[in-house]
Image 1: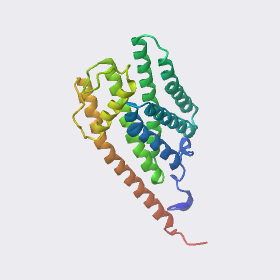
Image 2 (image 1 turned 180 degrees about the vertical axis):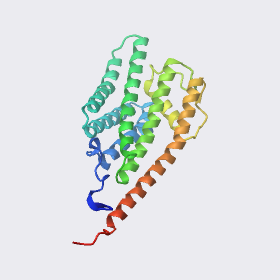
Image 3 (image 1 turned 135 degrees about the vertical axis):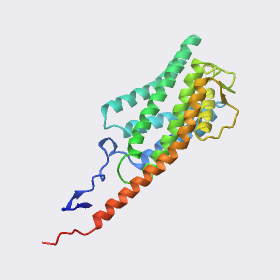
Image 4 (image 1 turned 120 degrees about the horizontal axis):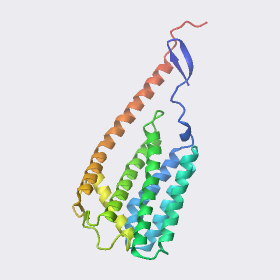
Length: 259
């Protein structure tokens, strides 16, 4: 489709093409990522706290999430290397933890795994945000990407709470008596539940931040949970209006007489 300037048609609309790292992104890829993250947060993690099948499902969801990310984000070799390294860490660190000797070794390995998952999720969140809030056509893919960002933010805050509890036990009251080393998946399920209830401003009251840093982080997550939907809606409406304006200008006949 051609767009027009005062001097006449000059070529395709400038936002018709996506940025190079995102030409391979489709709504199907974003849908798969969203399904994997949804199953992880709402099914696999809660189930893994009391059944082994939940652990298997959580691992499958994480591997599927990582695999789709690596398949989609392959334009930039540095991003590809970072995602591959994250996948290796997500798979390899739990395997090493099974052979670790001593409490402190388990704590360090669990801490490294939490940092790896957080960095992986942060990378994916930034890449998806570039697409959702960037120029271009407004469609279902942007909505799927926005929901994925929202869930990824909840997962990132859950990772942050996990690290805080590891470094400062008792930072959040109401957690199970078992340590993060004895039952890491149970602790991960509890903190994901706390993060989701915080970002949605539900606040059931069974888990309460006590440490000042934990309270500050919870307040920050609650603010993001309120501002993100409003910012998203405003941005998508702005993109939609800009897209409609370009289409109207493209359909407007030229002011210059025909040859």
